[in-house]
Length: 478
Ligand code: ADP
Image (cartoon, rainbow, N blue to C red; front, side, top):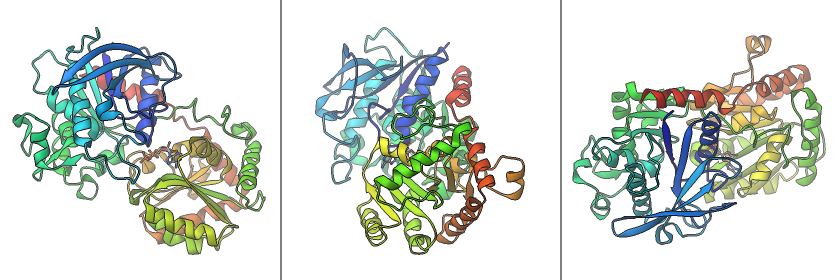
């Protein structure tokens, strides 16, 4: 069995800003349960929440800066985690990527280039950790320089996989940054880490990794087109043979309506009637009229353009005339936050907005809601539509990326053959979204069909079992 070093900039429950953390927390866990020797390496941010013991392993030095490698476990798992400890670069409070104002930390290039270099030292056994990987599995731009730098190392060296969780974040920096970071000039070409005269971290992964994966088959096709490829669609088409899409699994222990300690009443497909206790709890908590018949719509998201929040905003005047209640949990763009808050203030009997990041509330929303809104412009995989299906909360999603791959639209034939799990609309426009909302409300009126939709979703297997097998097959190929 191959030895895998999983390289990531966030992992749940140590630190999380989005779906990457969910995957980094749950895929290694699934792999280790399948008997794979996997370890995780990530920066030791100040905000990391470790529990349990932490050991000092060694000190590695690059560019005259020391990093201490500390070992701990991913909480609740057997996965060893190596924390790259360098307070000078990672010892800031809060978010790993941005400051309080949402602006990227000014030295992000230096921070993640350092992280990549340390990872290469560890991978080449120059960190004296008595464990050398066969494969380095990198994730997103923060790890992009690892395949590039490793490509300059002599054999034997580990093979590399680069997984794209979101093409929209590329780690682009000025060309002077390359000199500042002392990156080898051999990597600096349009076929390497240069992108239109800038330094691109993500291209380090796309150009040099032995295999590229992304988090759904539809997104793997989309990113080879100009609409979704952010200018690197050509490179991705060129490397098509090495590019595959593997849908993310979810942590079915953590997202389990049968044993969720965050919610008022646990339930499963056979005790679905108990779900309404969670609905009532939400209505009481948020001062909404307590009424089981009125459907609760929820949205949990980073509030950014990608997620179609502006499209939703345009729908709100009409949406809020319909018989529904709407709860939103999110954080992000200040202007979007402001506009949403204004709506919630005017329509407080129907809409409540919670501007924050709260894991427990996310679980309560999933358990208590009837419908989950996800009008994303693009969505590499998306996790909330998976959590929603598992919680019997019917998702309304755009037909894009992983949403297209994991939600089956409700049509006469899919109702009949019991495959329907949600409502899928064609294009990220207000017209399409409104139409889907109205379609959902019509089906909601028919309690028998609605229950069937819920059960269809709840019965689907979104655990890591299948997807981890796909990664395993890929590891074995290398
Ligand atoms: P992305 O990675 O693009 O943000 P995903 O759907 O893949 O989107 O994953 C988002 C993850 O972050 C989910 O686990 C979701 O529940 C969580 N999340 C997003 N915003 C919030 C929030 N405000 N509070 C709690 N959890 C959130």
